[in-house]
Length: 97
View 1 (cartoon, one colour):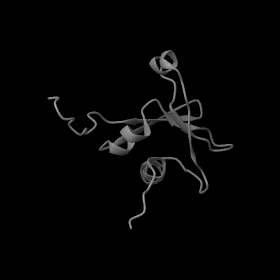
View 2 (cartoon, helix red, strand yellow):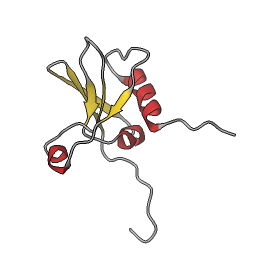
View 3 (cartoon, helix red, strand yellow):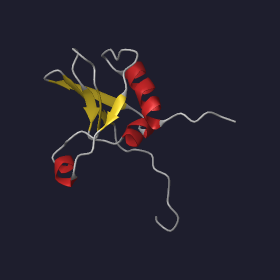
View 4 (tube, one colour):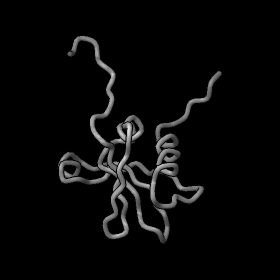
């Protein structure tokens, strides 16, 4: 039986490999639950808390960040923003073109 790897673990591995900043061992991704209006204003939907180093997060979903061919990282006041480079590969759903 194959082991299932959580999306958050895959994203954490990818950020560790590609990011220009350090993500210490033991760091975890915390899911946030912003409402519709907060999300439309750019609120993060997940973050990695790094004590004393500033937070890392994105307004894009973890799944979108994992699926993207490339991620971009930008720093703003000791916070790192993670964004996928568009377009994000999507599976076609039956009945839609």
